[in-house]
Image (cartoon, rainbow, N blue to C red; front, side, top):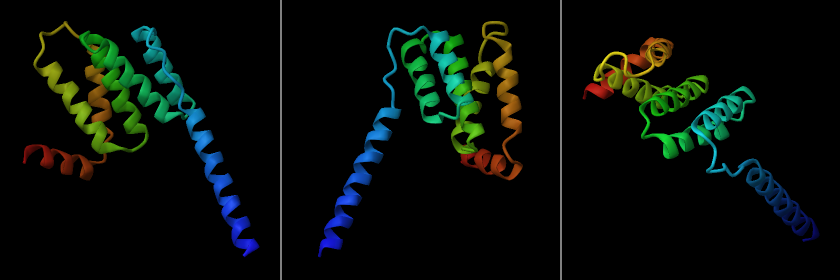
Length: 140
């Protein structure tokens, strides 16, 4: 009986420790950061393999500054690139496809050309079989 109680106590301590660590790793993102600051912090988070935090920075940039087409495109691209790095091709494809459609439907020169090229490059890195599957899903 004592062993069972000790085991329960250790399990509870472990659960509380994991909970505390995961809560402390989820930092609050200040809402007074500029779009470039949010994007830069997101890129830094990718560089330090803090992928969840990077995703939060890019989503915050879209939430706060997404009405600006340039910021929207850049933040969406960075989010797609993050998903590519994680091999989350389904998520990346949806965003990359959206970016390319935005460029196809915009007046030339109104959006930064670099992100169209980068989106095309990332799209080409999706494995062929996966890309075909995603395109078939899109068309049906």
